[in-house]
Length: 123
Image (cartoon, rainbow, N blue to C red):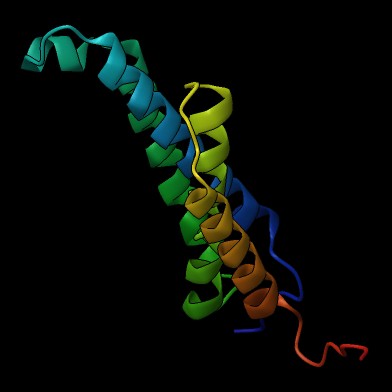
């Protein structure tokens, strides 16, 4: 398998779709009053969460045709960062300094792990 030099469109799509699935899952959880099989199956947010998760599974398979699993899976940790943004901006949740530090470490790790081979750093 020849590795793509940069994250492919499929890898980005997979990350975005998984983040959307999480967001719609959260909205489904807070919008339901009771949790019965019928209320879950008819909840639009739950249905959208499953739809985006299904699309994520398809784009994930396409991403794996372009990237080794070790690269692609590590890149997907970016979902944690996007979920923090969704938590704050969409669901009005409070973030702690630990959230910010953790997100910064994840971003730094993604940068280190996804740099193209042979990239030079300047001291």
